[in-house]
Image (cartoon, one colour):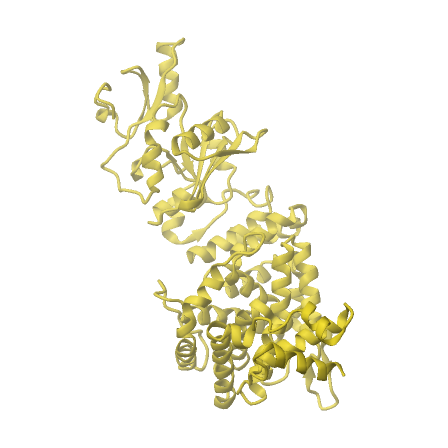
Length: 556
């Protein structure tokens, strides 16, 4: 507080209107303080300020708010922090997505904030008076919007859930300043996700997906009336842009329990609206060693995949818990074995997971998408032989093709679609290698990565989850050990012998080969170069001369 201002501590927890250093209005709300100020000095510009009350319980707030407090305290209108940032503050979590609302001139305020922080601002929606400030290095975004309605009360009522309809004066630091007209704090304490009113989801059906995501992100339950509202609003998802649906689906897959979230989408009628091809797997039966229909197996693969991921994480903040199943000791022993073989490559695997492709998706999310779609081709390829055994010949290719169509419908980037398709198409390869004996030749390693490229490691990890889901644990020891050995060797070659067996540097180029063998440009040159690289990866060629002689023989 400036030395020129009077001591405002007597007004703690209330709003004051200041004309210079003089208090011209006081009220429990900003509107009341402004009304008093306009009555006493109708022609003067005043500043509205919330007087923080240090006696309240401190909130977990972004340090950015401290930096912005001087700017917010010079405004002639109230500035409120709303939504997820307030919810997270009450849960003791510092949010990096800060949403602010003001009565008017939100875009103007966003540019003032950007100037104060030394970063650019962007107009998101001129008509709705919405602006954004992004701080990439701090992984933080600040959105500024005009009230959704005539005042703050109307704005909060127009939101989706009670726990997201709590506001805080942007300069406040304690619970005294909270504005909670829909008892969101009570629902936070009870661990409930509850709609504000019966049209909360119908007004914007994508909120159905958000409600499920929040429930699983926070480990909360959907209230009974919210479940009913979701089922009523689900058929209206076809009125929502696919981009918004896609974004919520991807965020849902990033939760710590994607299998439970997808199961809830199915149970609440949402999955049938956004991914009917996945729902179609519900009744597709499978023969032993599978113990579940395809959809249930898909959920089990996602469940095990999260545990496999946790076994790889370095200095993880959470310890994976074993799935609840009859083999109580299977999960810990399986995860211990996974951790042992992959520990030398954990940092490289995590680096792959963090790397983003076009569209902003990272490697871990692409892996989870691959897990969700890995068996989507089984509905179309199921056959039953005379002995009653169920088979799915070619389901990998059929699934990859179908996955591509689905993801294009959801407007994923071409790069992301190609990677997920490759994961689906290749998800059986490590299992086939394990069934063929478990020991990999250099040639087999080269051919594996030639087919799977950079997705080969994610495919190997998916194969572990697929195996564990198939047997509800490690299953036959010989098969499990063979798969572990294959996955370990694939990682070893990819991360430690990459230039020897995965992608050897060319011994000769096309021009040299054409000159040496008197070849014309064409497919034959490419074929010979591929054969040379494979023989090189297998350890059979080491010099350019040997490569040319090898090509001469192969050409003849």
